[in-house]
Image (cartoon, rainbow, N blue to C red):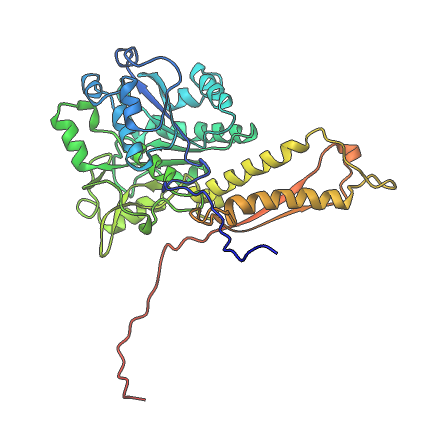
Length: 417
């Protein structure tokens, strides 16, 4: 008999605050003049920190000399997501969102090919354009953004069909007009597309003082992407407990200042119309993302980025599990050709187990829960001999998000019955 002893087990965990599943891997599509682009190192541009981009030739000084915000957006991303892969695709300065997301356009083809070359590992796509043309605005946003959002949604839908689901965040440059007349983005039926229209007012002033005339219309899409990359898939990027943004003072991309030129009624209206910006909360210092809105009506599950990220992540897991069964032989019932029930249970349990381990019961204690429950169901009556196909139903209950807490306060006399 062995001597009495104490047994210990070591579990390797992550010291990073970032998600362990690489859910934050992002591609940023950004436009720049050839004078800037020609000075950047050739080859794939994949960065893990700001210094990587600087070593490739993307610098604050070149931003200023070329009147282009490239270093700026990368800096914002890594302010919150250092250590996360950021892929950079640079496009010409005359690129529009409609160009980028039109299937027959060469830039669109290049983007699709790049995503394909990364085998679906890129989870988020951000676009920040530095246009060298006059921007026109309709209903508070540029005409190109208004026209480009449906194209971007079509792109996201097509990528999902290629087993490469991703979420898209667009820069809402120069929010113009009034909250009342602003375009209602939720009516565009683009649930995989989000628009950010905020920035740090202090930083904008610094850029303008330095002589950067292109800073007047920008929004901090890189900062919002970095925030998304720093939280798990099921979490609202505006969560207060996750900490404030590195923002000193906030304004919209048109120069409107929350709680000064815009009151709370204005801000509520803008949020209801699907825009993302920065807000304050009582008793808490700092600025936070207003909500994880998309360009979709609230009654649909795709109206929240967190819900989309959960659905997309579950889809990727389903792909990774079930791709192993492609072209595999499967035993069927000899009398009617339906599925063998033991095989059905295996297919159901394989996917359930994979999603639970990654999103609900991860053995890494630093990994937080991303969903509430998961259930996979396959009807054994399917005739796989006739169709060559098995249909599985994956049902996930996401995490709830506390958007309001109502508290009843009363004063009582404990000596009075």
